[in-house]
Length: 482
Image 1 (cartoon, rainbow, N blue to C red):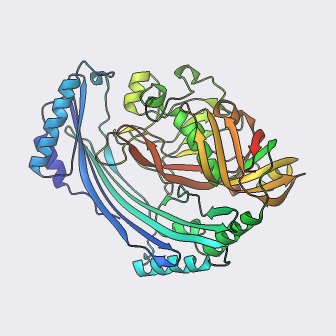
Image 2: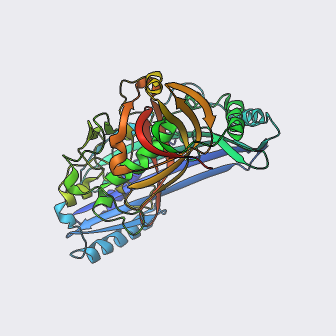
Image 3: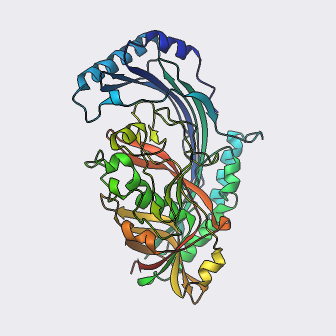
């Protein structure tokens, strides 16, 4: 984990802070390393170090930002001056009157908990990737394969000129492995966690064990070959059993993005789109069946987007967004809450030091139910089990969608049957969640996520967590690739 950011930056910033209504500094330092073995060949090592700060000034109702990688006295002085000029230029001309918004002044510390066990050396990690890569070569129809490990360590410090001081340290690990097979007429790919790196978590190298990385090469290659020989998924209206690797994408696109408050307010419409959700829906709208319970939960220590405070300084606490199927609360930070008059959550987040915070998903989870996997399968007369996202498409209001998965299995008369390839389904967010028939218990629950959620102008790609059990839906339009 990166060392804590120095206290000297605090005294320097406060000595330079101007006489304005509000001034903050958000300092970020991030180191990363990416190891990849493709087709048994170690790829060039990718490492990165990134360090800089964002200054925010609010004055006379206007707000200005300025970012800098020069953390010297002259660099910070210049950034503060630019931020102040923007604040003064925007005063009286902005959609938001920032003089009416009271940003918090927090103090505290947060750190990813990591086991005290010794960490593997880089050589040991490369040997592991090489071994799993070699294990993928179980058949001549395996035409491409790779294993990778991405580790990131981040230190953040949030300061205000009048007393706030929050330090947060994070450690992320993202393992992945994928195998492609081909018989000359068809190509199928199977992966560990999906193309969006679903097994991403905070913590140490225990995440490799949690993700089932050891032994994954042969297992994933075997499934890719099974898909190659499998028939196409049947088409029709039937039951759909989604496993956590696909539930992650379903939650992300058809609950997470529609509930982002700045999107509902119209801020994102010419880039990331709007939302079918409107402000008057909160408190009464039936988003899903009575089995649907969704929380914003930044307090799960192992989850990818857990933290103590968001990037506006708001304390992060678990909150219900949807309870017993009824929509209760949006995903909106302090500024969006003030604009809308609604209670939100601490989810104003920036992807790095050179971007301002905007409303973003963090850990958005479906709470476990009481159905076992066997019980859900046993209740299905005709349906398909689908796992691991392969493709996605959804309209600008995050309503009409079509998703494809890597892996499917038929369910007939309460029993799992053969594997099917190219399984897809479509629906409408506003009605899809009302077809939820059963929610899996803790034995079906998995902590997933993605490092690649894009939004904002200028663009921001951020880390998001999604934990979910397996879920069963009824009367879904399912189709195959034939």
